[in-house]
Image (cartoon, rainbow, N blue to C red; front, side, top):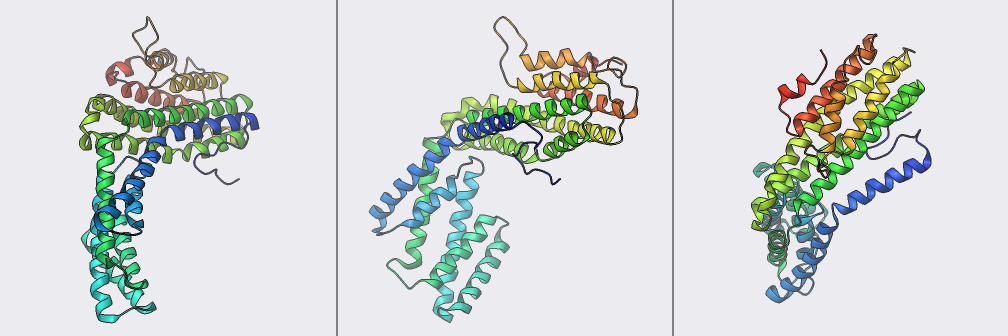
Length: 370
């Protein structure tokens, strides 16, 4: 059976459960990007009006395109995207205008201009957007008849769009904490689902289900990377907009949390691989392992939630501490090599998650049975 692509759910799940999970992930994805979408729409309209007013351009389409390219639905690397777009367009317009004057227009001329522009841009920088924009602008100049403003007009459109994108990013920044929290909640829920599904495979002694869960766990890296990118984007927002400086402390906490969850996920993938191998070869695994995985799933699902009223410790940290003292091979009845390996990986994952929430490493290790 082929591995499901990232974001898909194990095929063995009941349809109702799969649909609920898919709806939850889609809703969380929408919550994390709606403000960026509105920024793109607003910026495209403003850039159109501004380019018409400043440069007397009848149809400044590329001003709108530049805004969408620079802003996008992700907040990360906006400054770099603006820089790459500006340099790429400049290179493409300059080379396109110069080469067309020498060799004219036609199919082979377009090919020559595109290759030249891409080679020059690639020599200057490794940015993909820079290289692509250089090639596209050079191709536009070679492919279309001369028009009012020519290449300079297209360059002015691009610079106008880039300026509008920077202004919107600085004056109307999305609270970076919102997207980061959404990413964190979405991934915590996904990882908790995988742990619960893995626990079900252990209880049912179902090797096929364990294999599906393992494949799904391997496919989570894209979501983890997206979470990391949203944290990096939050840090960039601080540099770009003074209106969001106060969120820096939480973004730094999210950086530590994402790093710890990434490490824990790697350990849990190893645990799931061992479970799959053991079940494939009909090894018996203690049911207590399933209970530990379910308890870990509950703690993971509450990652990032504040402490309950009257409590001083957040629920995730409290749940992990309670689980840690039970994670001994003897306590869980782990007698085989496979069971012991799974316990060892669960121990490592719990330590990673505790450290990610501010528990000193030595204190986290002391909780584990010897």
